[in-house]
Length: 352
Image (cartoon, rainbow, N blue to C red):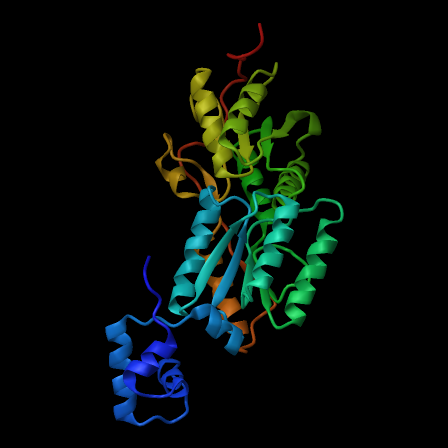
């Protein structure tokens, strides 16, 4: 086990008081003779002294810790945003603690309490707001108390009572992609929605439904099934959609992981993309461009979301003003997985 070198040991070896050693190693503004300071630094380096960050945080009330709550850190969407956060945090010399809530309301509340107990200087809420009954009120209470005690909270969605928000218009992004499909000529469209009780899922589904209404497509011509932001769930859902008597000519998925599952299912049941069915996603995660054919999707600027949210948080910590809301632009990325519809399909998959 590595022996921890204490400040007292450094002071003793350098022949100075603990207060003097602390001033030198803590980079205090209190004046210390240059020769003495140089000697303390040399002794600290020789002994392998490392300041106790937790002890310093208790004294200075600055932990240098940033908490990040994500819904599922195995999802490339969250991984890319977190990458952006880490990039900015490193520039500020801060430690990032990523907490994976698995979209569970109690876990989300527990992690907020843990970050508060660790004196995190700021918290980033990444991902859609959980909309379970009563949960929003509990979140609001915890966030308001944390901010009142000197912390800062920046969200990438619509959590109430936060210090600032950096987000995208999920409703409009979904609406725009759905309208694109209708402009290609698709009139029978399936939709794979995200997890229930998640604000991002609700906004994207509402954008799709409103686009269908705006395009004059009757409700009987659309099919909405659960995709749950999961490849496996999407594979099953796609098989369900394509086994209908009049299957959709296009399938819109609430995220790109769903679209990957739909591609797998289409291949399994002998359908070609986009000749037999067009498939579109949302987010533009890295694997989307490598699919065969490459996936048409909505580019959500995930890396930039992470960077800008982190930048806003550090500005707040440093006492600088920030805009309360920043909405980044989305963009349709048209690739090879979409085309105008062919003749109505005869189902190639179904129950016997």
